[in-house]
Amino acid sequence: MNGTALQERPSASASWRIALPHSAAAVPVARALVRTALADLEHGADCDTAELLTAELVANAVEHTAGDSPIELVVELLPSGCQVEVHDPDPAPPGDLTRPRGGEPDPWQEHGRGLLLIRALSSSCGHRPTESGKAVWFRLPVVPPQWRPA
Image (cartoon, rainbow, N blue to C red; front, side, top):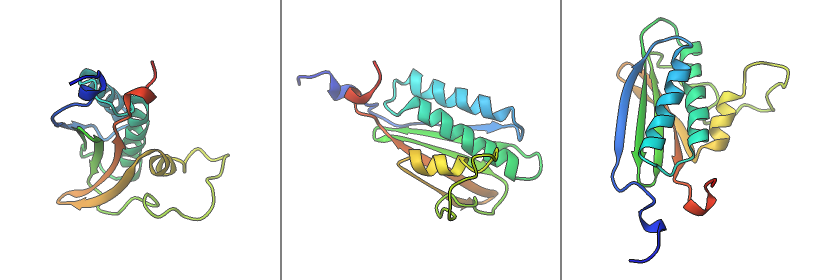
């Protein structure tokens, strides 16, 4: 076979499940884990976007769920892209992840843009109930090699 782009994607899947503290300290840890997973496997998903959206999911789980039970980060790398899930103990669905409320976020408010970013930058996103609460997730596709930064 000719061409260098034929083996640019990972040929098999890999996944991680990591418990994180129910505190703001979980956000940089989650970002670093996603960045490392994508870089070490030379995965073709956009690392910067994956980090940003992971940080949003983890921050929302920490801020909007009560208690101090750990949250879980699940990263799944597939030949077609990556999926990141954050599990938390609250069964209530995230506010406007899949059904945006009317209007733009107030530019003067500190909050209100995280779910908008997840909807806008992911190829798909959603939530599902789990035995212990819920999982909120997003997917990113593999970026073609010619579109990646040099």
